[in-house]
Length: 146
Image (cartoon, rainbow, N blue to C red):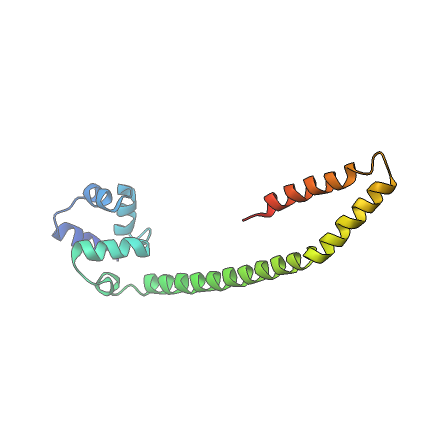
């Protein structure tokens, strides 16, 4: 592959430094590709094919190892995407379960009435309990608001 990249670069009269500047990478990366010490990324292959006006297949011709590497990477990306979807689904389920534990409006009303009743029985500290509850509840709602 290195010799193919080098011949196309020379055919277009571009130095390694000029090519590196066009691709926004280092000159050493170009040298590594041309000396078969590394392979260009898929994004760089696309940029090279556009620059040289040839298909990616022509750039990869006779380079089975690189084709295999790209194929393996595409499969790994698909696996990672599946794992992300699974994790998103699990996270959504946990959020729904968490939401199920929140008080309903009716439960909250009954709890508040109970707090007020207890507060009346525990004068003079009693009225402070419901006020404290509402302050904590308000902070909790602002913390969990999207």
